[in-house]
Amino acid sequence: MNKIALSAIGVLMVTIIAVVALFIGTSDTEFGQEKKQFSDLGGDFTLTSQAGPVSLSDYEGKVVVMYFGFLTCPEVCPNSLNVIRTALKRLDKESQQAVQAILVSIDPKRDTPEKLAKYAEFFHPNLVGITGSQDEIDTVTKQYGAFYNFTEIESVSLEYGVEHSSRYYVIDQQGKLVTAMRHSTTPNELFAQIIEVQEKG
Image 1: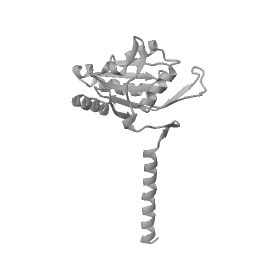
Image 2: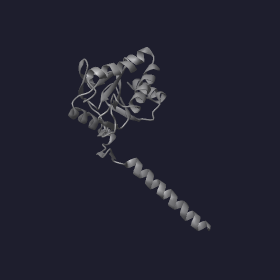
Image 3: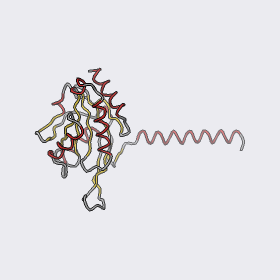
Image 4: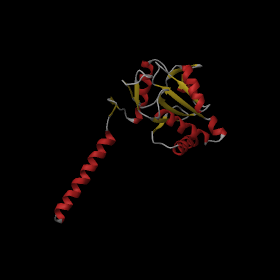
C-alpha cells in the first residue's frame, strides 16, 4: 500500500473518530428525554423529609451536594453516597458544618420520608433524604437535567426496577448550580470541588 493510500486512510480514521466524539459529546437525549443547556439547569424547589417540607433555599449560605437515587438501588446509589460520605469526612469540622448533602428519592412509591431518614442517617449526619409525589419529582429532575425510567424486572422481592442517571450536583451558597459531576467522580475530586466552592463563597 503506497504512502498516498496510507495517508488517505489516516485522514479517514481521524474524521470518523472526530464524528463519533462529536456525536457522543452533543447527544441531546438520555433515557429518551431532551437535555437542557447547563446554564438553564437548577433552581429552588420544595420536597418532603421526615421532619416536614424541605426547600433548597433552606440551605442558603451552605454548599449543597445533591444526588438523585432510590433506596432499593443495589449498587450505584450506595456507592455514590459512600463517595459523598468520604468527601464530607475529609472536611474539617467547620467546613463540614457549611455543607448540606441531599438525597432526592425518585421512587416515592417505596421510599417514604421515614425510610429515607434512616437510610440517610447511616451515611452521614449532614445527609437528608427527601421525596414527594411523582409529579413533584419529575419537576425537580427536569430542573436539574436528571433522568430516570421505571422498568419491569423478573424479581420475587421487587415489582419493578429503576434506571437513572448518576450525578453529584454541587450547588453554591446562593443556590446556584455550579457543576454536575459524573458518576465516576472520586471522593477526592468531590472534596476538592466542595472546597473550591466554599472558598469562592
